[in-house]
Image 1: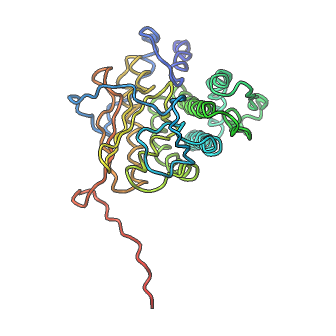
Image 2: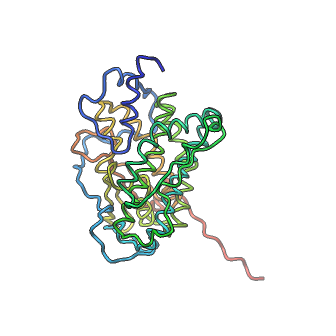
Image 3: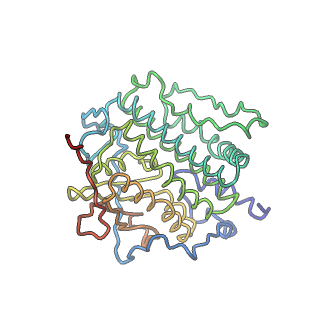
Length: 375
């Protein structure tokens, strides 16, 4: 990287933090020019009709700590709950299912990045990128996250700082430890357990954002978006679906099952980065609305709706479409709204999920398994 762009690197690292917000003069013109991105042939998904707008609202209630319905759910194997809060789950479920699940989700994501980066650039470059991501972006936030999300008596000693420099090319970063559930987690209050879960979500975002940032500053935004596009659909999403079945009890192939998956997804939990709401106006119709999204905050704040458009189109539609097909080949996705936005008062994006019927040209005939004939 040239000396001319080095001063802007710190600004880029700051911007890529989960929940980062920008002031009007936070970014220099030189830095904006540095983030050039080729959108000439980017036509994977059509633009949404700009004439349709959806006002945004603060409707995400999942993270509310002081409201407990008394449901004490052991997992999410029961019916879809439109008013789901994480406090609806029992302490045992939060301590022994949700917290381990969230950590495995995080590990699945960073392993996906490591594998894809290694395939493209080689194992040595992957190791260099991983250690730079950890030391430059994750490690400086560890103490803050511990103090903000974990109980006062929580202790964390970063094992990665004890790895000698000469061994790092052959040693993966250890991501576990900070939000790993401890044996006495069941003794914590429900407020403490939900706060822990929300912290593990921010930590997950911090880790994957660190990988994304390193790829961007070393190669390009186009390379980063292409890696995201590949790894989410090809490796992360199938693994995530399996984890949700194993830990959260989410199975089945209906729209309601898919809505439960979305409500609990560890990359879109509520907090500093997202405000998401869910509704099912009809039995086989689900709608998910991102009222606020950190990507929109970041790129609109930089005055780069072109980058925002590619950011949102590079991963989100694929993740929605691929995962709905994993649930049911006849579940379809309609994008009601997606950046660039017409007005800051509109929602960031809006998605509609429904089922195809046999008259739909894209209907996939499902052949049921036949019982063996009795001879």
